[in-house]
Length: 279
Image 1 (spheres, rainbow, N blue to C red):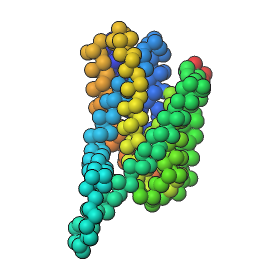
Image 2 (cartoon, rainbow, N blue to C red):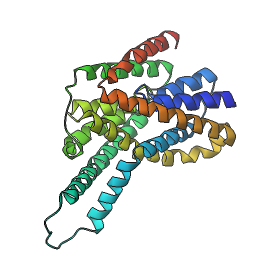
Image 3 (tube, rainbow, N blue to C red):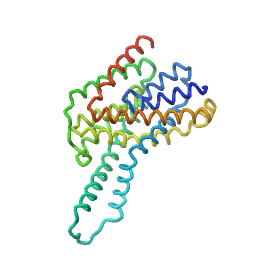
Image 4 (spheres, rainbow, N blue to C red):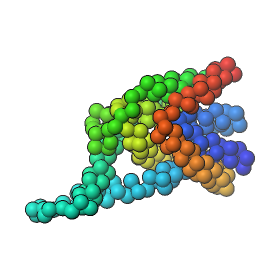
C-alpha cells in the first residue's frame, strides 16, 4: 500500500458507497488491480465508517429527532389528562410521531439483514472479479426496474412490518460485494410504495447499524491490517472517502427526488460486461 493507492481507494469508497454502484464491489476490483487482495476486510469497514460520518452529518436532524422521540416515549409519557393543544404543539407531536415511526422498521430490517448476511457469508461465498461483475449486472437490472415503480406517497408511519422485512432482505443482499446496498434498499422501498424522500432517508438510516455492526465484527483484524497499512495511509483513505462521500450523497438525494435511480444502470452493465471479459 502506498499513499496514492490509499487515496484512490478512499475516493472510490466515498463515491460508490452512496451512488448505487456498490462500493464493496469497486473496492474489491481496486484491490485486485493494485495487488492488495490480502488486505483485511477491516480496511473496507473503516472506509465505510467514513461514509457513516457523512450519513450522520447529513441526516443529523432526523437522527436527533428519532432519539428524542424515543427517549420521550420511553421515559416521559404522561398519564395525566391532556389539555387542548395549540396548532404548534400538534405539529411538534406529529413530527415526533413521524420520527418515532422509524424505530421499529429499522430494528426489524436490521435483524433481517444480519440473519441474511450471516447465511450468505457462511454458506454462499461468491467473490472474485467475475462474481462481482455478475453482481454489477444484477444491480443494474434492479435499478432499471425502478423505471416502472409507481411513485408512492407512504411516509415513515406507513412503512410497517411487511415493508421493513422487504427492505431488510434487500439490504441483506448487499453482503455480496457487487450488489449495491443503497441501490437495493432504495429500489425495494420504492417498489413497496414509499415516497422518494422516505425511501432515501430510510435506506441511509438503515446503514448506520449495519456499518457499526460490521466494524465491531472485524476489529479482530486490526493487527493484520496495521501490518499492511500505515496509520497515515489509513487516515488519507478515510478522509478521501469522507469528502467524496459527502458530495456523492448530495448528488444521490437529488437523483432519488427526481426519480432517476435507473441512470446508474448503464454504467454498471458496462462495468459488469468488461469485468466478465477481462476477469
